[in-house]
Length: 107
Image 1 (cartoon, rainbow, N blue to C red):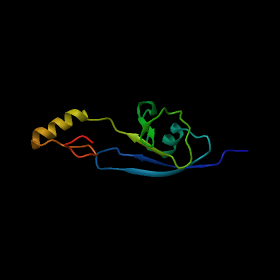
Image 2 (image 1 turned 135 degrees about the vertical axis):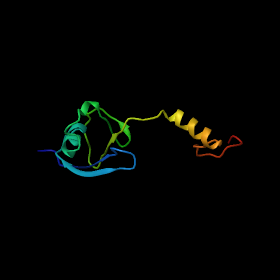
Image 3 (image 1 turned 180 degrees about the horizontal axis):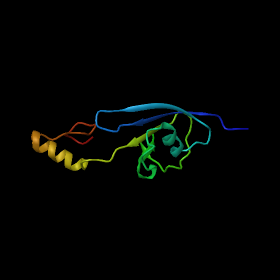
Image 4 (image 1 turned 60 degrees about the horizontal axis):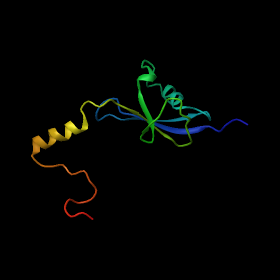
């Protein structure tokens, strides 16, 4: 008995503000590498050099896919996130709060 086909989505942002999305149907047992090749976006790129993951978590290219997985291809960071926060603080003079709980008393 052959494995059932998988329906997945693949997302890639090649440049800031640009998002590509594609729905693919792959044969059962397909891997992350198979999805990247099937997309047609990375024909001239060495797949080993890409940073890719499933549902926001980096994964090796040989990771098997499951039905309705979200495959994501990540761009390299241009600025260290800590340095970006420092630069924003220097520009605005205000602390940027990224916590979910309010500042002040500890709960």
